[in-house]
Length: 346
Ligand code: NCD
Ligand code: ZN
Image 1 (spheres, rainbow, N blue to C red):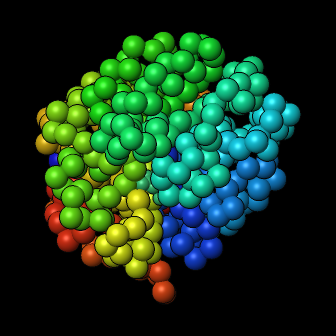
Image 2: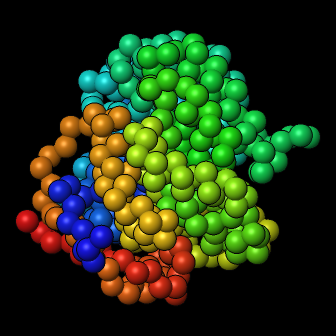
């Protein structure tokens, strides 16, 4: 492999949190900086994005910060998202609907407790060919905790796929060998995103380091191995979704109650390149970060206005990404990567 890789198209990131207001203005410019021109934006704002109008207005705010990125939008599943809403959403160019099980992660208070009441909405989505994004965890209970919450969710994934076989479903941010196996067992309408940080982390690095804490939490070494193997396998079911989730530093520094979310946007492609290089699989990188997700989603994009090149060069991750009062700590702050993204405007 040579020491630089020119991307025919910049990367695409199918799971992005950029928030709103000052945080949005801080984080949106880092999408391009990280090597990405198509970003699928999560709807867990406060209040969540549950209407077509709110999604359209949010997209306009995002575009006003950086018009060189294509922003794809998804609605937050709630009782307001009816079959009627789905038809309007399809016409408005909204790509999907995201399910947050109630209480499992950041801003999921308005999430779902029972799936059955949404079957008419899922049927309308299947008909309209929209994508269902699943946060695949069950809420904690007597027998469910952060380590088995994803595995316990997998029967729900399979059940939804069985009921709606043509509905395109993405199991978001897979963290376990069990999840990878379940996605493989489903038909071609079921895919999964894999983050950059889960290609590196295991539960040991999460314990005692709130900057590595996200939902779902990183699991065991055997799980990390399965994720890396799936991401580098060349199977089109597995593609990149960073789940980059910025939080103000003060919310990460709380011992008890630290916010869940790892921020990777500013160096997203470089982290993935590092993991693929360590695995000796750089030849599979473009499919994972650029081609497979685009093929699954079929989103209409404008011609990219910038070119991305990955260069083999030392790249120290800064301690913070700062904009006025907003301070966010990136993943692997202060550590060295061996690949750097060079962005050239066309
Ligand atoms: C995300 C966030 O901060 O919005 N947090 C996280 O730990 N991944 C929400 C999510 O995707 O679960
Ligand atoms: Zn997320």
